Each structure stands twice: as C-alpha cells, then as structure tokens.
Image (spheres, rainbow, N blue to C red):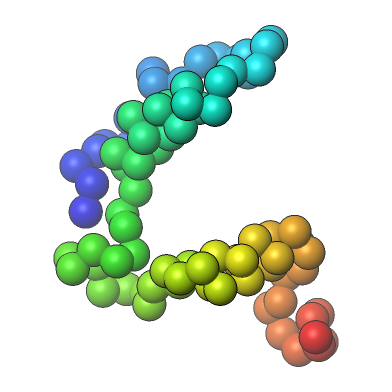
Length: 81
C-alpha cells in the first residue's frame, strides 16, 4: 500500500501539458516517479481486494483491445458481445 496522502500528485505535475513532445524515456521516468509511487499494485501480497489481470501477454493484449473498443459492459443489454 503506498504511503502517499491525498493531493500528493498536484505539486508533481505541471499546470499545463507540454507544447513539444518529450522522449519516451522521459515520459516513462515521470510515470515511475510520479504515478507508480501512488499505485497499489494488484499483485502485491498486501492487496486482497481484487484478482490480478493483465499478468500475461494474452491478458495484456486483451486489455488493450478492450480499451480500444471503449465499450462499457455493465450488463448484457449494454454489451451483448
């Protein structure tokens, strides 16, 4: 469980998006420094609320496809496929 407090993220990110693209390595460094420090990892032995997903190559591809389709499958009627 992360040891961050509500609002920890605000001072770590800029007020506006950058005007120019940044190198992928810089983006990933920001994600590691800013985002990952506040994430409760599903596969942590201290986290028991949900089951892990996207822990294999097929699961990652399936998650990418679900995100690309952007369908909210609350019930069968909203997403029968």
